[in-house]
Image (cartoon, rainbow, N blue to C red; front, side, top):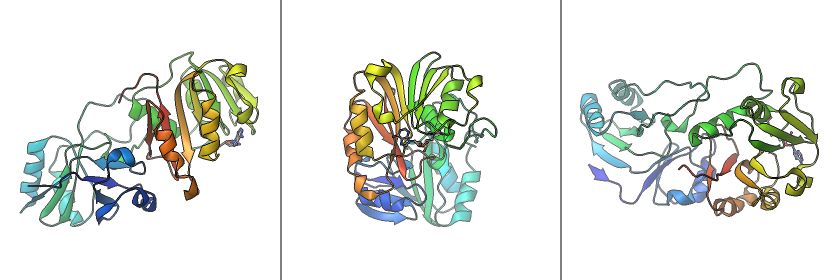
Length: 303
Ligand SMILES: C[S@@+](CC[C@H](N)C(=O)[O-])C[C@H]1O[C@@H](n2cnc3c(N)ncnc32)[C@H](O)[C@@H]1O
């Protein structure tokens, strides 16, 4: 077995390879899986990180499956080369938990490893990975009626990976809330929600007495006007610099934050590091994020 010393394998989200390539030094590339010595703390555009990649030579499907099973129970395949052979190895391994998952769900405390074949006889694998989901793909059983768009999947995903969410009656402020999918998720948690947008919500507000809708520019919303909040949510399409400035106003008046950072143009990428430097905060590229990242700051840090 060969350890790939001080290296990590980064799996890029589909179509965002250029973003990942811009932040790592690439040693080798296997489709959208990259070997690199760049530290995970400096990498934000990865869907899964193989934290301890190793290489081993195998002579048969049975031998590969036996070897992986001897290390741990749960493995996810990233299909790259010798795909049929790697699928036969996967079929010899215990089934991993069922997807799509139903929200909310308690994540089982399992270690999920990842593996791929580089050729018929070369197995690249990692017992430890950053994501508890196969290839970082968090697939939900969707909600056909209720939320006005698919954006609710981002909030479901972030609550699932954090294994935390607002409690009933928590004071929540959501800016850029229209058409209202995040508001739908939050209102159904029983929180006390103020939703702000210049455009109306496409939700029947009579059904949700716990939503107060303000038709406003969110930049004018201040802690003085709104009072202390337990959570602030933003999925607004705005330059990260502007959002950062507005969040500064709230640093002493809100405990928890979940904000999408939108990066349609690369020249705003420098702001990622500024957000990452904020204490007790994390940045994820969610499976349901596109050209955007999700910044999270929690009062009670769990991970
Ligand atoms: C991507 S959508 C939000 C989707 C929402 N999270 C959902 O789940 O339905 C972004 C929203 O931000 C709003 N927005 C953009 N700039 C704003 C501003 N300065 N003040 C208030 N709303 C704004 C837009 O009107 C738009 O409805």
